Image 1 (cartoon, helix red, strand yellow):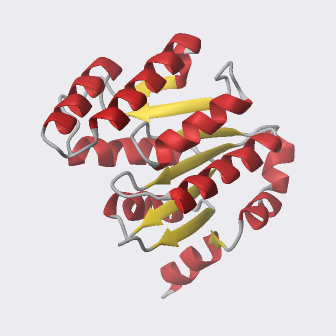
Image 2: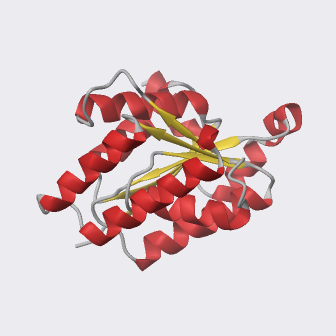
Length: 199
């Protein structure tokens, strides 16, 4: 009961509330890293708009984003962040495996029909451009051999450790988003969670 009450206190209702609750931390540290996470399988115009608006607000407050580098929410967040920070100094992307292997993995997913090829190629171009602009923006786990569930779960853990707070966009109760939110709450970090139901 106590754990669920603690977690409930860490869930904030609005992004503005999140900023307010982090004022002291912001004054102390100068800049904060907001984890942007969410569903990759299904998104729509509403999800994309909400992600972009959240990133705009985060950047307008002089903060930074950290995300997971896949299609959907992560792609929207990174694209929007690059509009506000073309030098990519305020962007970090955690990948479960090195970028070259990650690109091969995603192209295989597209070939198998798991992902849309056009979106995969857009993502790969985005990540390669980001690495070229700021090599330190891409953080890869070189110990993992494959981008499997274990590797993604480890990536989520590292992202949560790095972030000061989490902004999550969850479609249809997606498990990966739920896993990351749970990890953030368990580590005592504030979370703004917006849920969607898309048929």
